Image (cartoon, rainbow, N blue to C red; front, side, top):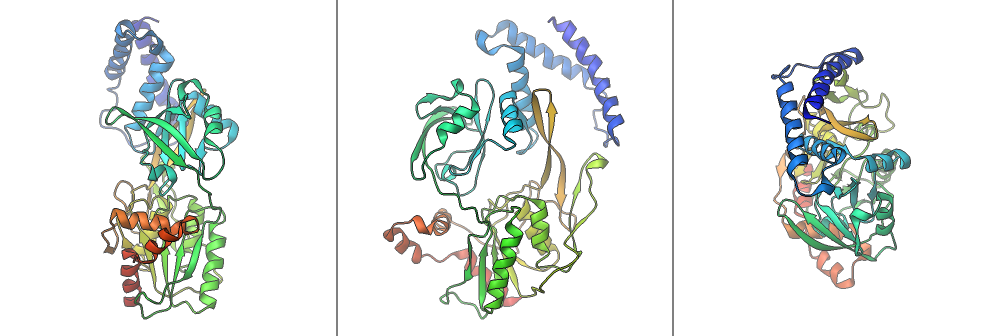
Length: 418
């Protein structure tokens, strides 16, 4: 297709897209360079044709490949959560009704016709400990070239028995180097509340303090946390440490229900704000009724991997002076994404930001704790060991038993002052 013809089509489509958007709903706030897009679209198409005319690698020059990777770069440049689903990845998601994720390894994948990319690495997972990063490309899986496998075939090769190492060859664009990694499959616990107990008497506190670790916000997490709180309270709990370190988030509805355990009924806790008025929501409230009054002191534990719903819970409790936040500034994921189908591909686009009762958003800022704690790499490693204590050797358990969690120590002091 000639360059002039492509420019003519793009010139025709731009006003069509604008008018279509106006018919669907309210117009978003105007952009500063509104109406100046034609020359920039022309530049994009000119570059596209120069690449096709002069680059020596003919196998990489199809319009589909070049445009899809240009779209991928455009979406990735916006924020860490927008993205472009290539046709193969979007087809898999549409058919399987799920992300191409492997919880036992701790990675989520995406695939174009010539590249397999790690799109997410779960905090504290085997992939995280192997220093694999989101954005790395997988070159080989168990010695098989990933580019020659379908996404379904790659996922099948990555699955297997717990405890079996999975050898991978990956490429990191930031340093333009390939590297080898071996990920050890783990058991994935289904419980969102894997730990709920009273703290060891060696730790200083004038209150009988419970400790509850919430790993993620799932459909069952409110029910699990409610049962754990009931049990601790029935045994005399006087204060609570709610550990959200490493919690990547999950369901907003679960987060709001859990907030209802610690706040009065019908308390305003979160809302969304977007540039398009239809993406700004009314303020969401905690449930109108609650079974128990849980008025004891609470400290929420955060770290740099606490994200999304974890940040909204911590932010709301902090805004409303219901809990003391202890640890590190959180990850900074306070945005709303929508998947928008585009033929056989799709956009995953950020359309709004979440806001806590005071109106602030965690997006790109995180929740700053009331009590900041410096956490060393050894502390992070020990926290990970503590959460998989059942799989440790006796020597590893002995080392862990001598460790004092600095965030818990500070949190105990915080609840004793509430």
